[in-house]
Length: 330
Length: 279
Image (cartoon, rainbow over all chains, first blue to last red; front, side, top):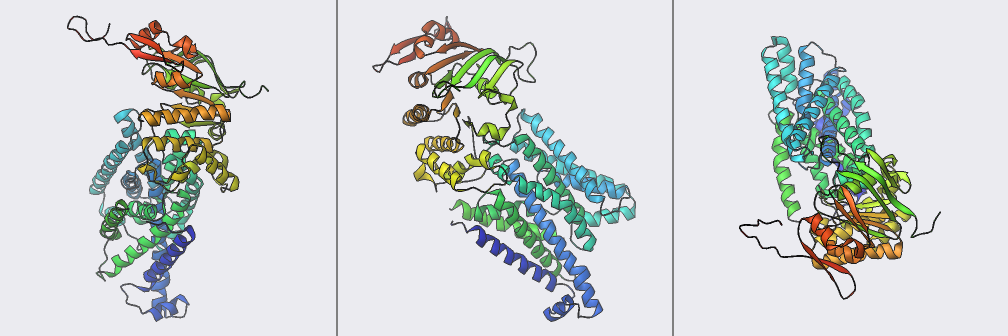
């Protein structure tokens, strides 16, 4: 398969992102026409339409875009870090840990949107530490397959603790936490977008700075070291940054799977594995993907809404299988 | 400064290495080792498995501390080198490497420019020239667009040498570079390494369990056994049958080839019910 130029790739991704944004704003349960939406965007529609467009759809599209982008970048970085193409925040237990941290905070009565990501971050870091311990116990040297296995185990453990905590919580807390846990981009609003952006930008910057080191790390820790990478420092930074991204997205939108796996791989298959291109490209594609998935989730059975994680799984899995077959048939 | 062919690139002085986590009663992985490798010189570390050959490399590459003695690389304590600065002077072909993702030969060799580029600097014409030169030198220029997973073992090792050369180093360190290669590729690889030493004045430090290959190519053999450097010199002085029999736990004979190099032959020692396998 011929690789497109970097410029062509980014042009196509930008177009796709724009298309997703238009679809996300234009389509919805309220059945507004394109003309009504356009008028509302220009602040010339009626109160109700303007409210739907500006306070519901636009922040939801923005949130979906950032959550999708952040999950995709986090997955791409983790794949290089643990040298396993199957890694993503969900499979490595980061999402589960972040979920547990956030639920503990919710049950303790913390409702501030600014504190929730910090609690999720603490949970994600604790999960990471536990996964690493498990992977080291198994063999002495770090084994990336054991790391994934440890991730699945820790993720399941986090999920079990969450269920346990919720079953002994009182009704009000239960409702808040359960709604949030199901994952979804609704009801967050502009403040939620702002929180997510503030937490994500430093972590994204760290990962971009480590792009070249991630390229080397994909060769193995020993070769990366001999090519001049400070492997221990890179691993530390990438794990912390990926944990923070996962935590911020989980705190904003609950646990959404498959984005971190499918999106980076799509870019890897199309354009290769240079993380300097891969990370920003994965951000754009992840954002567009989640916005489109959410638009589908809102409209497919309107006025009922599917959890967006169902759509990412149903769309993501066959998509991934198809790409994989195409790739192996190269 | 002394001229090329003189300056010490790697120096161990009375160096002892103990790995963290090893029981305190265990003998050190490397004990009071003294060794010098100079520019324009090919030195081979030979000896049984687990003797401490790789530990010598790890000490000189700053990967393990010496509990006593010193390990210097280009006159500077090996542990004090920042990794990128060390990678600008020493290219390493380590034992195992499996890329997690597919990449082309050219992309693989370009990674050798990392220590010169760091995280941000864009690759320029000097970098491209260094990559081209390295690929020609290691005879992989024609493979540029190939995916590395489609290469033969010999081609892949040459690509890794090209990547090390793209670092523009003053020394090469190779850990079992021919471990999975057949006879022709083994010879081709050693001929390449020796040519780099002779024509480009690189220092080469090679770990190999192929004593006979090492004896034909290296200027000096260093025999490592039980964490000690038990012999160091030209193959004439190191390949001494009784010493080798002792070190390897098996009787050996030494013969001379027509080109003058010494070669080692393990003796047959059929297993009998009384004697067991090992004399």
